[in-house]
Picture: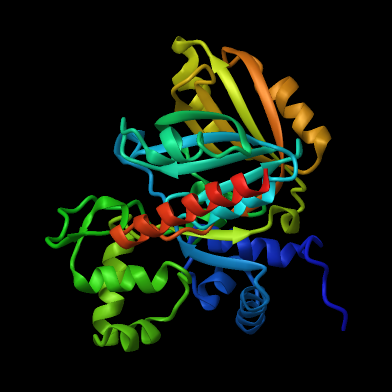
Length: 356
């Protein structure tokens, strides 16, 4: 039997299973089958197939929504480069663990990226390394001030509201942090929790039995800790799937100018729009950034000409994404990693100067 092409649209059943995983990344085949009215064996087989060929990956989200929507420290970067040097710069940025997201636009010389950093700091990447790279022709950075919608919160609209409610974990319960080292999302964790998070980061569907073998703790203890992390909202999963496989062939970045008295309402309206998978208030002239998926260019045009009307938006700049380069970073940057990142970017600078 011929394999489906890498960008062929998944069947309706497979799309519904992807949407179910968006509700709960550790969802069992039995529970999915019960809610969606499918045969458990069929669900088990399809989930295995989707994961085995790399169509779908479920990872621990690299970013959690900060309390009250505030920012934990991140910059939007817009980088323009000399034509012919795009791949060199992209590869160097992708090697850095403090760069969780990288997109290349259809202009052929433009990169959008997100960099984790300390709020208000003079980040070396922005202040020194990229500006000293001769292939970089311009660099804009904007601090994320408020989070309206994260990619991990986006849901493919193929389930009913009742199905999503039945598949989703309950509302997280805020609990006092455990004592220990700082772990996922800046929350203190003990050794067991951190080892579980580390093991789940690249594959959030690792079984409790495998996690027990990995950590050396009883499976019952592992299950209890996983339940606690989930109940507290500290284990956020994200489904990685090419949106083209979901019938969404267009991704766009939107840089919006919004009057201050409309900013909160406009951001919330975008967060509630089914196409929008990211919405953030930012510093800079474009004080509202958004990212969205669309079926086609006609749907993007309809969004711009109709859905944005009445939100107090005075200017819109739209960039269509040609390639999503990176969406799968580890959540924690260690000192050793930081040193490696510095070496990676210095190598980029040296290589760039040699090539120019």
